[in-house]
Length: 271
Image (cartoon, rainbow, N blue to C red; front, side, top):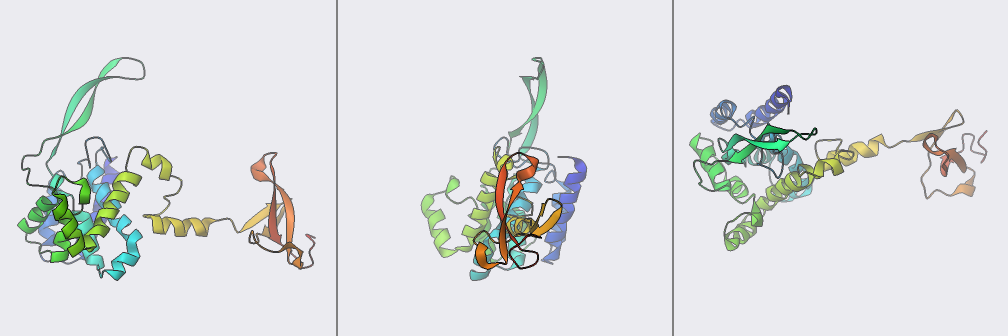
């Protein structure tokens, strides 16, 4: 990712955190700004394994949480908690990645050295629990629900005791929302084949927004022989003199398709 893209994402990330007006949030934002957080990857190879990947992942999780808007409302998860938990759940990865070099063949078949990321955590204090520790270290107070959400955001994909994970999910179902948003971002949007599958669909910041935008972008009219016709629903009745069927050359090819359009004069005729 280019530096200007990273800076744009960082501005969005920073402004979201500061908008919570949580006490001491400025100190935490300053530490993140001065750390390698903005430029670190989200993983060594599985998802967003590139410069700026961790920052982008955090914002992806924030956006993905809004795909579960009905659960946010039902479980009384305020926007402030969405921001705090989504954007800070993975700060445990700060100062954990190093860049190493390895030999590989390029397209010309020549051996060249290329950089790759390795994991070298100096304080292995857990995952979600470590993020909570760092947040507290900079004086930002979390609610009990926010603590549970961050600690349990890996769910059963973590190495934690399954009984503890299961109990925390039952006690704090809000943590399921962050976990699902993290899975959506990691496994669907950011995985190696995920971006290729979603690139034509993800036109918004999250699935909910993308679906809305796609529906708005759907073609409402069609040009037939130089005349613009308003498209009718596929299940519209043709013989009511308001709806007519017309043959159209599909996408400039030789394939012909039949479409239902509104009769311009309401008499069942296209002229």
